[in-house]
Length: 443
Ligand SMILES: *[C@@H]1O[C@H](CO)[C@@H](O)[C@H](O)[C@H]1NC(C)=O
Ligand SMILES: *[C@@H]1O[C@H](CO)[C@@H](O)[C@H](O)[C@H]1NC(C)=O
Image (cartoon, rainbow, N blue to C red):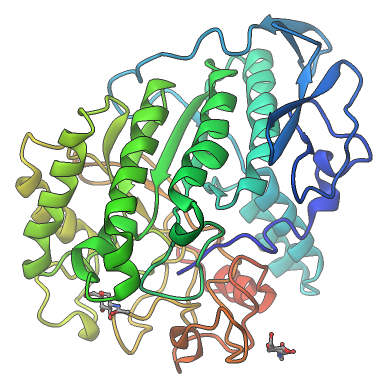
């Protein structure tokens, strides 16, 4: 489905790590790396693994993070970080760190809009918190920069920040669709690469900033595909690797204090009566077998999808499913989790502002006439739901409509999918403009 690597950082020139010298925490080398190989003064290019060298502050064991006021504070990389997440919702007492790449995309997009009122509304989207997708190894170095920025920012303001991320790089990713397949393949050492080239470097970075709170959505679609799509050969083949990889991810991320919500599809996927029980069993067994990592807080629903949290009336395409919106899905799933899995939820409403748009409930690709939805809030109307969130960065394409592309998925050429769509993850300007003008509540 949704976001992927290629063009997410098309506006890379606006970001500090594209400078001639890599900044502190930036990538400075590795197989396939074409960016800067020298580091900003005060840092040294250090080999992490064959694919990833990074500018680490100073030389050995202490680092100095400049704050906006020009003062600096020292931390010791690698020396801390085994903090169990504080109990309770990560959204309590924190303010979001705004995604720098999304802010850049939105600012550039707003400049292309000639109507000044619409342009102003578009520009305001940059201030709405959206999750940062770590959907390839190349996103890890910029993530280090964001953590450094967030740490400095919260030191200077005293306001505790929450950095929202999506872990999304499983081997044989997106096993039941085509548009968002990833960089690792099971046939080519993907299970080991996921650990050593993806999860381990992310964990190492997080460990360097124990003061920064992180909330993560874990691997959109992966477990849901194991519930309903094992008849697809690629999913059947991926089953054990998905389970072991997700287990590794939640154990390692929990150990450095990340609060996590496992992706749980949406009402039109796992909300059907026949799927609720098997889904609950899968979440429970994964969590229990992983040793109940304390960082697992619950489940994320509707990621990158279009369903209402509470539908005014059932969309006709939902007919037959008693869970015809996300609230009903959550209320029907939670009792099946019982006390065997922490039943707290977050729900993506980023593109759910307009309803009754689709021909089939399974249509997920650039659905026409969608609008931005309810803003992120902890005022959710349910004690089961920690927060309404914007996980999908609205405006980034779900998949190309070009049937000649190697990553073409037929869902992206349906009559309810927006035409002329570029590759997954790249900016889709006309789609973004529709999200802006059809936002509900309006921007
Ligand atoms: C995956 O499962 C969903 C839900 O049952 C179904 O709608 C979809 O067609 C399946 N995908 C494939 C490729 O079989
Ligand atoms: C569609 O994809 C093919 C294969 O990648 C490419 O050659 C062609 O230029 C693309 N067409 C458009 C309109 O982008």
